Image (cartoon, rainbow, N blue to C red; front, side, top):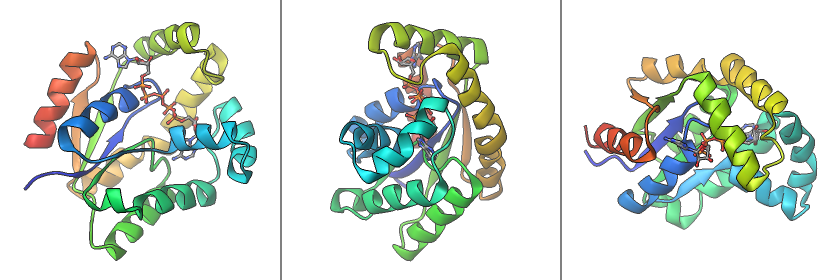
Length: 190
Ligand code: AP5
């Protein structure tokens, strides 16, 4: 089976975006990042962006109804028919259930969930470094810690959710970008 419909799960700074961009090239299917879509909406000052910005600044999750709509519209686009790499969605149980329903209705169920595990101190270092380089609004220590807490409370339970569906593969996200990429390629091919 060629895996083309997959999800990268992991805490902030785990490398989801970095690795999704690489997988996009090797698998020839689009990366679908709700974080990128929401940041674009904030920059464009759309209704979604205006609603999302205060949540994002605080490191809180944008309400499920909004994110489910944004991700759903993206997944219905033509290029996602070939497959997709979900990055940062779903992040709550209702989002995961909505995703399952949507993909079942399209007869294109998720094939694999790759869960990236990285030590919290490594994450803080990575994100503080990105703050210096890129100045992303939510990359300050207080908001990073809050994003981690939100991950532990609301998103980490999805590891069980996907394990029960026999879709989960855990991947060590520590190490160089290249090393993690090799582990992910192996997990996709397995
Ligand atoms: P989102 O953009 O998804 O942010 P995040 O999950 O906090 O993810 P990051 O981009 O910080 O981390 P990443 O795992 O993608 O790592 P990356 O590759 O970038 O979400 C932002 C906000 O939007 C949320 O807080 C929320 O408000 C909202 N939102 C988004 N989706 C939502 C949803 N589904 N529901 C509700 N709200 C939602 O790497 C991080 C840094 O580390 C980079 O500088 C990178 O170069 C570096 N790096 C990566 N890998 C390595 C490595 N192996 N070694 C050294 N450095 C590395």
